[in-house]
Every structure is written in C-alpha cells, then in structure tokens.
Length: 160
Image (cartoon, rainbow, N blue to C red):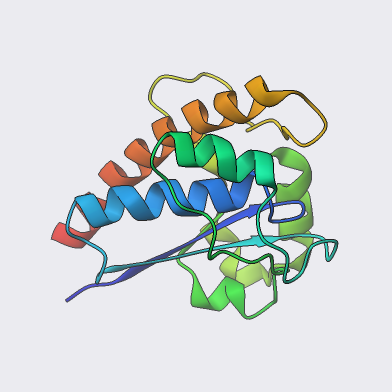
C-alpha cells in the first residue's frame, strides 16, 4: 500500500497550519484514506511550541465540525523535509524560510498550499491572528477549498 505524507506550515502553528491539518485530516478520513496519508503541521518560529491552537481558530473550526483541541504547536525540523512528501506553506514569507532550511535535494517537496485550491485565486492564506473573527472564517473557506484540491491530487498518486 502506497503512503503519502503532508506537512502544513505557517508561522506559529496555532492558526492556519493546524486548521489545514484538521480540515485535511477530516477529508482524508471521510475518503477512507487515513491509513495511507500521514498529516501534521508545524510553524517556522518557536513562539508557540507545545501550545494548543488559538481559541478563535478552535472556535471557528468547531463550528464547522473540525476538532483542533488535541493539536499542539511545534517548530519545523530539518528531518521533516525527508519525512514528508509535501511541505506546504501558508504564505510566501514562510515558504522563504522553509526554502532556506530545506536541503537542496528535498526542495521539490515545498509548495504553497493554495496552489491546490479550485475556487480561490489567491496564492497565500492570510494570517488571521491580528484580525477579527471573519478572518478565521475566510481561512477556513480557503483551507477547505485547497484541501479538496490536494486530496484530488494525492488520490491520483495513490492509484499509480
């Protein structure tokens, strides 16, 4: 059985990337592929190591049926670039950090998560941390869209 691994990355691993992890995990489980797809999330900075996702993030996600309560922040490690097939940044700033940390032979694993979105033309998931509640809803809309596209993409790989 072929397996694929996906790592989502934002700055602190308390808003966007844990949202992406939980949403994608739910979609993967619904598709019956949980045993074939490993999913995790990280931050590029060490601000929130061991912390749960932001309460506003958890609240918005919970209203759509996603549970983030068991997730805890962690910082990206060099080993992650070997362990994960896809290392997907939420924005260009975090992508640049990942690019600097990533060994040259693994850089093809890097990408922006929204490259997989079907309905959103933006390339970056905006950080909702300093905004209002509507920012967390917007992030969820974008993440759900990109998660659907990513799952479609990965399903093609699993069939091969």
